[in-house]
Image 1 (cartoon, one colour):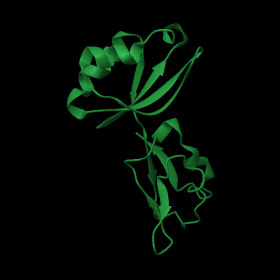
Image 2: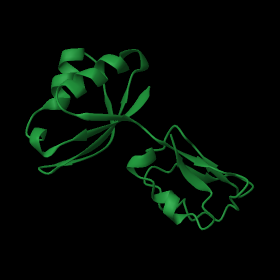
Image 3: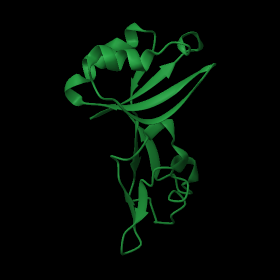
Image 4: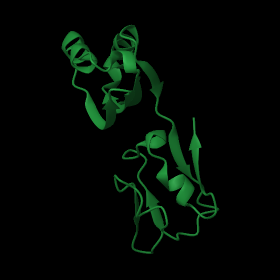
Length: 130
């Protein structure tokens, strides 16, 4: 699966863009997070790897800006397992293991669409990467 950030402008929010792409491409798209209103918005989706190129092009042809998800990375050298990031994460990416070390599940991470953990980290051990 490929995680893709879709950015909808104000001009296209009244159109059924996502359903059109799903119908046209015959692909299942998993919506991980979405906030789209009359002023525009964003949607983070997962697209099957083998269908990604065609789906991305279909969104772009309808005026949607498409970005591949930027990832969050934890520098375990700097991290001292304080847990400040754990309580803020809306999808429970960070957890404690049995030794009270913070674990990070990159597959669950919403990446740059959320990034609450970056500001929460007192030692800046969490970074946004490309």
